[in-house]
Length: 121
Image (cartoon, rainbow, N blue to C red; front, side, top):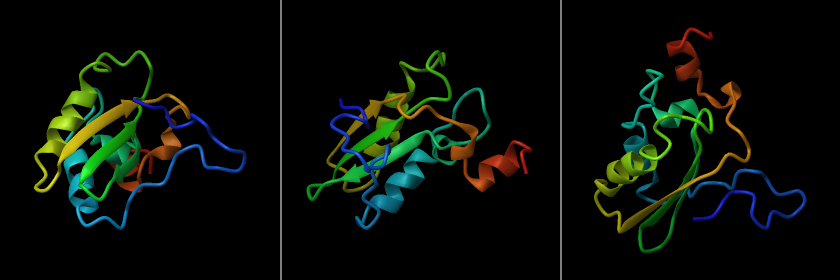
């Protein structure tokens, strides 16, 4: 599993863009939204923990994600939860979930919905 910043050229974004035009992209996002950080009552997608979703022509999905902190107690389990949720999406061939802490997660990565849910708005 790769990290986001491997072979990064100057001027490239720290987080690779997702394959948003793929026909199953929205379903994969919804599957990610079904996974919650057990310590925070918000799904991992709206928390901003999912950095990149790439889907190839054969519907193989690669997800690069992070955690709110490197010492998160579910660090070893959460990638499996995400893979299980996305594997259930019709048409998905396979799922690989990678972890990175570069760039580190920050509260500015949360969606407005997550900020509202947590009382930050």
